[in-house]
Amino acid sequence: GDASSMAGLTTLAVAGPSGSGKTTLALELCRMLRHEGCDVALFHQDDYFARSKPASYWEVPPGHDEPGAVDMERLRRDVRRASEAA
Image (spheres, rainbow, N blue to C red):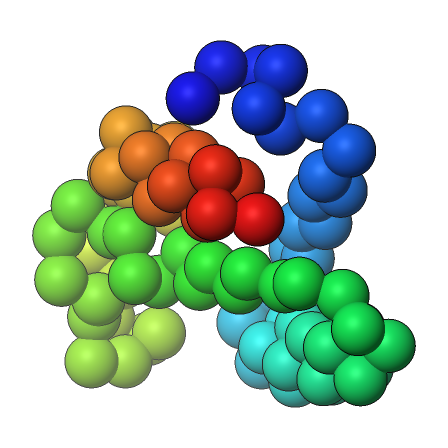
C-alpha cells in the first residue's frame, strides 16, 4: 500500500466545470484503453462527497466545491486497493 506498490501505474485526472464533458471523456478513454489491453480503474469524485450530492448544481450548498467536501481518505483507500489489484 505504499508508493512502491504504485510503481509503473499511470494516473490521469480529468477536471473541468459542470457539464463540460468530463465523464464522457473519461468513459471514452477507459473504453479505448481497455480495448488496447490496459487495466483501468475509474473513480468519480461525485462518489466521494462527504455530504450527499445536491439534486441540482443551482442549489450547491456552501463549501461543496472545497477540498474538505470530499472524503479524501476513502478515495485514497479505494485508489490504493485498485493499484494493489493491478
